[in-house]
Amino acid sequence: MSIISFSHVSKKYPGEVLALSEISLEINEGELVFLTGPSGAGKSTLLKLIAGMEKPSAGVLQVSGQDMRKLNRTTLPFLRRKLGLIMQQQRLLFDRDVVTNVMLPLIIGGATLQEAHARACIALERVGMQGKLLAMPKTLSGGEQQRVSIARAVVHKPRIILADEPTATLDRENGRMVLEMLEAFNRAGVTCIISTHDERLLQDADRIVELLHGHLIGIRSADSEVGA
Image (cartoon, rainbow, N blue to C red; front, top):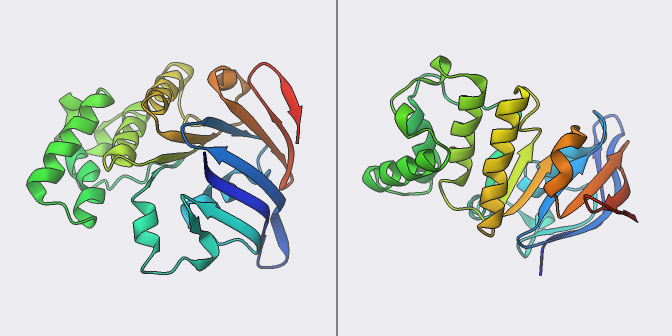
């Protein structure tokens, strides 16, 4: 069953900059999908559209049954509760300890402090950071900071994880560890959409979506190619 549907979606930024052009794509619930392409291909824009951070300039995009053109300040928070966002820059709050960073999405969503703390501890244990609850983010390595970001993204049990170049700033070992964590969430039934320019990470993908200059140029499995 499709959980994300693009139908002839385009995105223009001010100055007539065309970031995406006529994208048609269906992503099924529970899939592990990688977005590939060089810098400027449109990968980040596509993820931002799914997250509701940007709206399509043309075409129809539906996420979990929601027409993204009709989102407003009231409906967007409900959609965001179904999404886990992992960005290239971790955006952790450096004046809060690790467990507080992970608690924040739950507190914003109305959870009690006790509930938020308990669930944050479970999420941090799942990413191997249970020994760093009270550490400040600036004392962590880049790989550890990204693991905290993953815990924060999944603490509210999202249906969809969006990860924008989550391994780009990490060494090979830490990058592989982060990817294995995302794959574990996917095996638990979470739809994962991951942008990357590193072809070495793609062997476990259900599908690979190739973008170039804002155009969808191909869709393939990890071991065979299918035309777009």
